[in-house]
Amino acid sequence: MANIILHHYQISPFSEKVRLVLGFKQLAWKSVIIPSVMPKPDVVALTGGYRKTPFLQIGSDVYCDSALICDVLEHLAPTPTLYPAADKGLARIVAQWADEKLFWVAMAYNFSPKGTAQLFGGGNPDAPIEQWGPIAKSFGEDRGKMRVGIPRIPVADAAAAYKSYLRRIANMLEGQHYLLGDAPCVADFAVYHALWFTRTQTPVMAGILDATPAVLAWMDRMAAIGHGKFEKFSATESIAICARSTGATAQNDSVFQDEHGIPLGSQVTISAESFGPEPTEGELVAATRTRYTLKRLDERAGVVHVHFPRIGYILKKANA
Image (tube, rainbow, N blue to C red):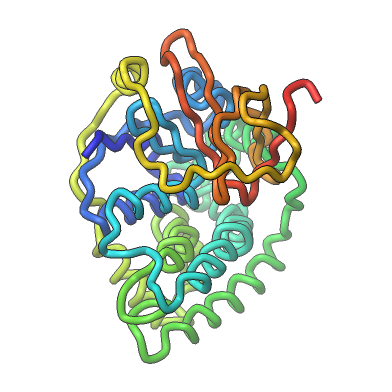
């Protein structure tokens, strides 16, 4: 099997989602730690502009968005499955809700003044803002630039919604170990990562979990999956691997599906519809039922195929 390279950083929730999926499937992988804020020159060399975390690299193929990464890993290692046959659609819908709704509610709650102080104040939830350091300011400014069409949720409203969501998750766990049955699926990994941040990165805020002991027990089971076998790798090494590699490695569909009147071979841009608006530009070489693929040339990485899921992304002609 080709080298699987995950570009991530430790406290990224979506990275934790993918790290656990890699552990679940017992896939060996290489770990490239990337900056949490811009500039990210090594990231852009591979993605062409996309700078959300994480992204997955296999040779000269770069897969953006954790939902697509899960599909790719499922194709590489079909068992154990992320998409149980009886609940395949439901699992995807719950995962999408978790990534797009639960995540933002949880993060609005986590980044309360106390949570933010703990995260950036050296673990001290009572640290005054002047002790948070420059990373707090740069992180806030960076994420502010990434927000497009996502209103900030007041902490009190986020707390109320989070409590309701936790009760609903607890309801799903009644009589079973995981959200949709006796084995974890993509829904579990998507729901888990936002709660993981509350529990591990802003523990001063983690008391909200105590009212749902079934959720805490489920989180323990999820954490026990682990991250599998991985080794540290450098961005320079990963770019070199890309430069000497060719061809797609994990495509499981190739039929052209045209929704835009843009033929293959056109110069296009792809950008996220709501968070992380930076576009990637390249030649459209695939537009299938589930994904887009752009071919681009980088002076360091060589020819790169950058893959995006259709859901959540906007395709346009370049310079349109």
